[in-house]
Image (cartoon, rainbow, N blue to C red; front, side, top):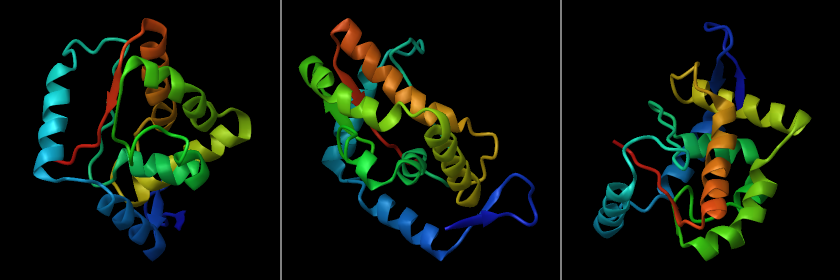
Length: 162
């Protein structure tokens, strides 16, 4: 789906399959008025001080969750909580979902290197963010879930397009 860019060293070029997968993942997102209102209400509850239990990934043109999904593959994505990057879990659900999320995201060695490379390919082939911290897409969501489990808190995630 991606080949090394001939014009931009260290970046990737996307082929038609990558664009189709990106369009599919974008189409899976529910952007109905009611869901957007729920996302707004949940976001209003997030602390503004960037504490340990928060993670934010932003990008221009390429969706960070889509990059993560491409990097992990379908089997691992199915172990993540929620629906295509969106979830709202109470404390009990966080504890129940954490083992599967750890299995999907706590990659080491060659698996992690391959996932980071695939995230980088997505973010440069479909977006314009060559400096995106690819490893943080693996670490950030897991850090939030572990923090919520450790502190007995709920957890929320959502994908926003602006």
